[in-house]
Every structure is written in C-alpha cells, then in structure tokens.
Image 1 (tube, rainbow, N blue to C red):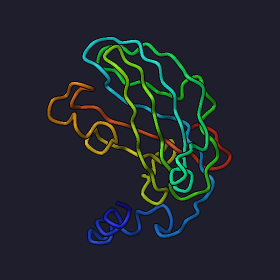
Image 2: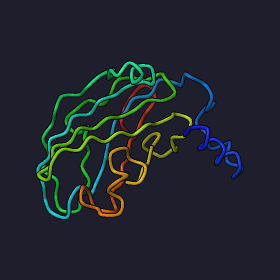
Image 3: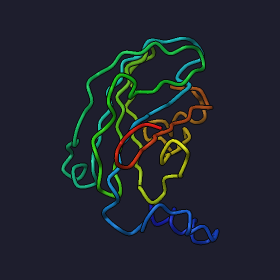
Length: 169
C-alpha cells in the first residue's frame, strides 16, 4: 500500500510533500492528539469506543501496543465525534507507521475499524500532521460502501498528530 502511495506522489511531482523519507522505518517522535470520525448515524446515538495503537511488528504478533480506556459518547445526528476527548492523547510514536484500531459499540451493533498511517504521508496543517481517510479506505467499512447500513456514505476519519512538545494547537 505504501509503495502505491509513494508511486502516486512521485508521479505527480509531489515528493516535496512527504513529511520525511517514506522508506525509513523511523520517524520523528509524534503523538496522536485527535481522532475524529463521523457521521456515525442519521440520528443521535450513544456509542462506546475503545482506541488501540499498534506497530507493524506488534500486529505481526497479533498484539496491540496500547489501548486507551473505554469512553462513552453522545453523538448528535450527522455529527463527528473525537474519540480522544477525555484522554491526554495517544502514546509517543517513533515508528514511521502504525495502525489505529477503534472498537465501537453502536445501537446497531459493534464495529471494529482499522486505519494504517505512515508518517511520511501525513498532511501538514495548522494543528499538526493530519491523516484524512474516507469510508472506502477505512478497514471494516469497505463492504458497506454500497449499502451504507453501518455508517452513512459521507463518513470520514481524521487523525491529528503533533511532534514534541506534544501540545495541541
């Protein structure tokens, strides 16, 4: 997947847009400070969410590096929710890539979502480095793209990372 992304960047002449060397296994220390997603429903819902972090090596061993405590949210109709609200953020990460796993309990059932990130492909923003993923690229939602039974068709996922000193802008 990363090779395809790198090839696309290089073909478009956008290699200067990479945050660092895409082939490096290490990245500058960075930390997840915001994990927004939604909309989750056409109606207001109560959800319970747990967020986990893993490196490629830990996923190969089928182990997560860390889990944040479970949190309960009220999500208004058509709104996004920040799954890190109430947390100090994720762990400090120095690997160039990782995976975020979100376990959600919705009124319609349980969802397990998975999104991989690579530091080199994060987009610079005034608030940090951002990963923006649509429904089609969110693990656990690909089969729902046509029917839109799990989440609405306009579902988006935004992960915001910051480097040292790990303060939110």
